[in-house]
Every structure is written in structure tokens, then in C-alpha cells.
Image (tube, rainbow, N blue to C red):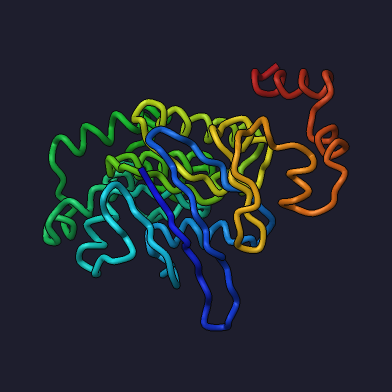
Length: 271
């Protein structure tokens, strides 16, 4: 279980990105984190793995208070937290397999990481994960030869290679087309269900969040203003999170007509 207790973040400029955030995420639960730009979503995710240092509060993973760890212990704890980045964060000149295996770097001695020496078990797991994300035939390709969707799949496999206890995902569909976005979200959700893995997904697309999350948390100006089920995300709640908008019309605009849906399927099937 992940627990945040009164987590706040104030930057040196005086800007307060998070205000006393309290939440718990249980095993296997997929949480969609939504809110306008600047609401503190990315800051919250980065505070959990201490890529950003919280100003106050505690962040507990299992029985470990992550906020109290020194640098050495934090490095050990980060092995338990898989991170999937918006910009993929792959090493472009390395192969797909090498990028996935980098998820094991926290488990091997420094000298082995220099020479990229991994155990047969680590390599077998990487092959299995690449098969799961549909990239089994691409293991020897350089990362810079992949499409955006393929790169994000490599990022998913790399995070799972860590065998994490928690998955943090920062805008995984921001640069992807609608079909690929759904595929990526489906992969993440399936991985969490298979491994009973909790996940927090920072995502701008409200409809994707509703479809693939068990729970929605809405942030506004660094404060939690909604915490509930996807079904409870009414127009009134969306207004509380984002401000005034004609949500009914936006939903209608986002829903394809029957002819548009047929055309998309035809294109996907090569008709």
C-alpha cells in the first residue's frame, strides 16, 4: 500500500505546488490523476519517488517512509517503484533489449552495469515482457528506430523489469494518437491486474482516465478536490476540477459518429 499524509511542496520561488495531500492507494488499484495544467500532478508523482523533494509530510510504501531515507537507502527503495515517463526516457543509441534490461540496474553491482552484464533470468524476463507488449521481434532494434507508441511500450516493459511494488506513470498518452493511447492504457491496466500492482497515472484525457482507472483523483491548485469512482465524475465535479465548461458538448465532440467510427475501423483493418 502507498500512503501520503499531508504532503506539501513549496518551491524556492514561493510557489506552492501541493497543499496537504492525503491519500492511500491499495494493491492492484489503478488511480487516474487528473486536473488542469499546473495543478501539481507531475509534482505529486515526482514527490513519491523523490525526484522532487516534498517540503513536508510523509510518503509510505509498505512499511517504509520514503521521505526519511538517505541517498543510499533511497536508491534501494526506488527499485520498488517503476516509473513510466511522458517522453519515454530511453537511451536512443541502445537496443530495445538493453533499454528494458536497464530496469535491473538497481539490482546489479556497478561493474556489471558498466558492461551491461545481466543474469539469464533477467534476460528471460525481458524477452517475456517484450512479448507481452508486442515487441518480441524488435528486441535488437535501436530505440531511435521506433515509433512513439513502440517507445512507450519499451518504457512499460522497462518499468516492469524492475518487478516493482508501485507503478508511477506520467502522461503516457500525451504524444500518441487515440488508438495507440488506448492500447498503451490497456497494457498498463492489464499489467497492474496481472501483478496486483498499484498505479498512479497522471493523465490529461478524462475519457481515458474514466475508462481505464478504478479511481479518479482530481487536483486543482495543488489540492485534492475530488476522490472517487470514474462513474462519479459528473459535469459538476469536472467543473470543480477544471472550471466552467460545456462538458456535455465536449463529450459529444469527443464521441465519433457511426460513420467516423466505421472509417477508423476500416483504416485500422487496411480496407
